[in-house]
Length: 100
Length: 172
Image (cartoon, rainbow over all chains, first blue to last red; front, side, top):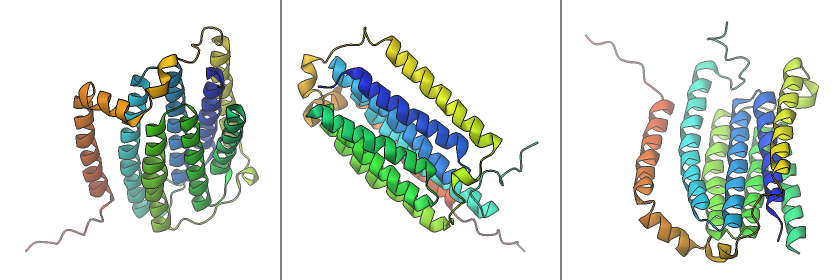
């Protein structure tokens, strides 16, 4: 069996890729997908800790995080649709009404 | 054997995550994200979390990504320039910040390697559906019920935000 630091390392790498995606991309949908990537990375580290401690509560936390992620995806995509309807773009550099 | 499987899955997960971030077309990006979710479900199986692996495929790769693809096709967003052709101060700064996050996380993991727990003996039946159901319907009953309210509220909120408001008619 593989030891815990490998799983945590994989989780850290995925989280950082998600961070870079949010910071670098300009397409709002891809930024949103990068946020999902970060959520998944955190879920992976929770499951790894749960399996290695033999504690089921970590998996329950992942279960509720999945529920929140589903709700967040629905509302976030609705917001993206509303933004697109007003601006006819999902490029965040062109959505600058409130920018100084 | 399990180690090779983990290395294979981890390679696929990291590669598909990079492809998600870098690909030009939004649809390709979403499909690579689906691949990433499926490989993560494989990693969950390695960790003996069968229930979460199935839920990951059903909810994430099934429901959420279909929602994403639906919105992408609804909005009909065209391809962008590739990322490496739009090099700017913003891209470099984002990359450096991301690398800093990675360095911090890896440092934190590496500095606690000695005190991390070994594999628990009780983990064989922790991830089973029956074990999850036991805890879910006893200890976590109230949060589970609240989840239903949360999802209902999210659906209603999404409908309200995304609906196309007709122009209010002028009343005589």
